[in-house]
Length: 293
Image (cartoon, rainbow, N blue to C red; front, side, top):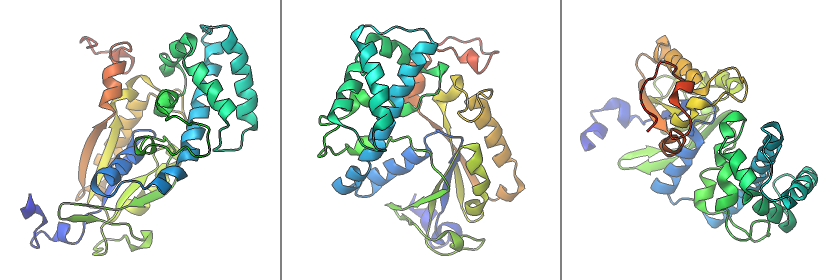
């Protein structure tokens, strides 16, 4: 409501500085990018073009991960000819310049992605490390591998690149101006531009969080609902949902955040709804006795 942003509300009038936090791959960066698309002018054609290398890199890494997992899971290709394509994939992917894709490599990826064996392995992705963006081959635009290809803004939102350090962004929402500024300007009593931060979620990145938490007015903690049956990329003995719960508890009970609003954002509901039909919740919560629907 407008009254929340009135001059009498000193905290908001000084500028609101939310910080997105959460475990790795919980969708923090995607939310920030979607806010830019919704509340700003989105991404220009040139900005989308700059993400082409990211889309290509993720597409190659994803299909390579799936094909490698097929051997470990003892899944055969639906079509024998795809075995030759897989061998050629490793050769071309290994020699390709980072962030580039030839038309030949694009063709290999599309043929492999349409193979029933590859799809069967993809459906068992919880058994190996695979980024959420792995469905790219089915959604990439025509021209993948061609120099003129420009990713759709929707693809730009989901590149799945690990955030390292602290990333600032800005946009205007109603009466609030979320604007990028310098990290050194963050301190208690800061009355400068409002900031929104996306911080890395992997364990190695978390030590950097304290540098931006001090001046924020709210912590938006993101949890991927679909992580309940996955393990950490950096620690395959640790369930991702359990890691998120531990991290959330440590933030909520930290004495430095007693005056900071904390918002729990449950993310990736669509992936959760798909996954819960075939992957039981008891993987994460053994005591759960409900149905899987």
